[in-house]
Amino acid sequence: MDIISARGLTVGYGRMEVLRDLSFVIPEGRITVVMGVSGSGKSTLLKTLAGLLPPLAGEFDFAGARVDYRSEASLRLLYGRIGVLYQGGALLNGLTLFENVALPIRMHYPEMPEDMVRDMAHASLAQVEMAGAAAKYPAELSGGMRKRGALARALVLDPDVVFCDEPSSGLDPITSSLLDDLLLRLKETFKMTLVVVTHELRSIDRVADRVLVIDGGGLRFSGGSPELAAADDPFIRTFFLKRDSHDDA
Amino acid sequence: MSESQAEAAPDRILLPRRLRAPEVVGLVGDIQRRAESGPVILDFRAVEEFDSSTLALLSYVRSRRTGVSTVNIGGALARAEESFVRRPSAVPLETPPSGSRPVRFFRSVADRFLFRLRSLGRFLAMFGDEVYHLGVYLRERRGVYPGETWNQMFFMGYRSFPIVCLLLFLVGVTISISSADQLRLFGAEIYIADLIGYAMLRELVPLMTGVILAGKVGAAVTAELASMTALEEVDALRTMGLVPEKFLMVPRLLAITLVVPLLVAMADVAGILGGIVVARVTFGMLPSAFLEQMANTVDWTDFAWGLVKTVVFGWAVVVGSGFKGLTVGRSAEEVGRATTESVVLSITLIIVIDCIFAFVLY
Image (cartoon, rainbow over all chains, first blue to last red; front, side):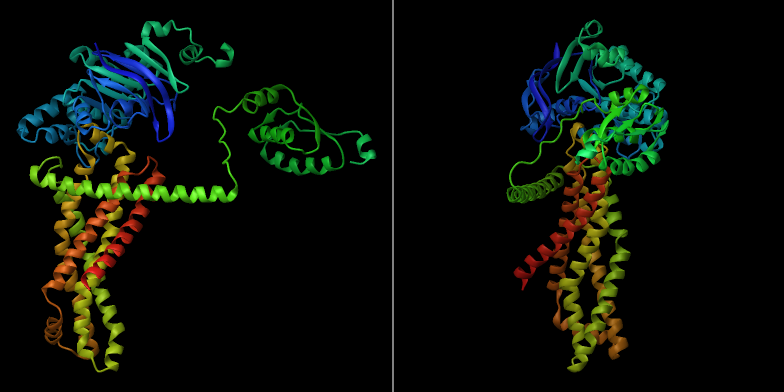
C-alpha cells in the first residue's frame, strides 16, 4: 500500500517553481530515497510533503486522505502522523536532549504522568543509542549526536512516516554509516516508512528500497533500486558513475 | 585607421612562461597602448604557469575591441579555456527589466508599497492570532512549555529593572533641571512637583519604558526567534504539531503583561525621585512638600493610564519583534537585519500608539 501519493505536484517559493508536475508514490514500510544534485529541490519537496510549504499546483494524499493546506485540521492530522529529521537536527537549544525528546509528548499529552513521559523519552533515546546524553544540551553534542537526538524526537510519538533531510550531511563516513544502519533497523523492527532526502551514493546503495531521482525541475526516475542500477538515463549514469556528462554525450 | 597603419606589420607580443595576476595587470595597459598604433598578435603558446586572471585576460581580449587581431594559444591553457571559459553558464541569465526608466521607477515604488501593505496585513493578522492564542491558552492551559513564562518574566522584568530605574531617574533629574530656571523666573518653583508628577506618570515613564523594552526585550526576542527560524527549529515545532506562534509567543506576551506593572511602578518612583532630588538641591524644597504638591495634581488615574499605555507598548514590542523574528529568511545576514528592523518597528509602533492615546485621553 502507498502511504503517500502525489499527482501533478508543483512546488516552489512564491512565483518561482522549483519542481514541476511530479507524480509519484511512497510505499508503506519502505525506505524511499529522494536523490538529486544540490539545489535540485529535494528539500523543497520534503517541506511540501511535511506540510510546511503549500504546493503551487497539484495535490497529494497521506494515508488515503487528501492533504488540504487551507485546512488547519488536515495539516494537524498530517503533523500528528509524521516525524521530521532536519538537516541540522533543529533541536531546541534552550532544552536538554531529554526535554527536547519529551517535548512532543508533554505538548500532546499534558495529562500523561511524568514517569511515563520519562520512560517514553528514554526508550526513544535508547533506540538511537543516545540514552547516555539525555542531560546534555544540544550545544554540548557533536553533529552526529544531534542528528540521532533529533531522530529520537521524531520517533517518540511513533509516526507513520519519518522524513529525513540529508541525514548524512556534514558527518564522517563512519557516523553516516551508523545512521544508515539505524534507519534500516527502524524500518525492519517497526515497519516504519522513511523518506530520506540525500545525494550520498553510499547511503542510497545501503538503505533505498525505492528511489525518486530529481533533476532539471522534474522527476527523472521513480522506481526500485535494481531498476535504478540498470537505468539507461545519462544523468543517472553520470550521478552514479561520477563520469563527466560530456563523455557520455 | 590610416593607410600606413593598415599596411604595417602586426605587433607580436610574446607572453612569458609564467602569467599570473601581477603580470596580467601589467600587461593589460601595455596591450591597449600597442593596439592603438596597429594590429596586435598575442602569443600565449609559451605560457605554462597561469591562473584565473590569465583566463580572464583571454576572455577580455577576445570579447572586447582591444585591437588585438589574433590570439594564439595552445597546450594546457587552451584546455583550461575550453573547460572554464567557453562552457555555457548553467544559470540562466536574468532578463533585463522591461519598460522605460519612469515606468520601471513607478513599478518599483508600487512593488515596495504593495510589499509593505502585505507586511502590514500579515502583522495585523499575527496580532489577532496572538490575542486568540492567549485566550485559548488561558482557557485550556496547554500548548506552551511549562515554566517558560517564568523564564521570560525573569529576563524581561528582573534583567530590565535596573536599566529602566536608572534611566527614568536620570530623565526625572534632567527634566527638573531644565525646567527649574523657567519656573524660578515666574516664582513658580513649587509647580516642579506638578510638572514631574504629571509628566512622569502619564508620559515619560510609559514612553521611556516602552523604548527601553524595544531595545532590550524586542531585539532579544527577534534575535532568538530569527535564529530559531533560520535553524529550522520553528519548522520542527510545526511538524511536531505545535503552533510556534503560540508556543513561542504566548509565554512572552504573558510575561510582558505581568512584569510591566512592576516596572512601571518602580520607574515612576525612580523618575519622581529624580525630581525630588533636584527640587531639594535647587529650591531647597522638602520631599514631603514635593509629594504633597504632587498629590494635588495627579491621582491614581494618571498612574493607571500610564500603566495601561505601557502594557500596550509592551505588547506592541513583543508582537512586533516576534513578527520580525518569525518571518525572517534563513541567512545570518537576515537575522541581523530583522533584529535592527524590529527595534525600529517597535519604537515606531510605540510612538504611533502613544499619539493615538494622546488624542483619546486629552
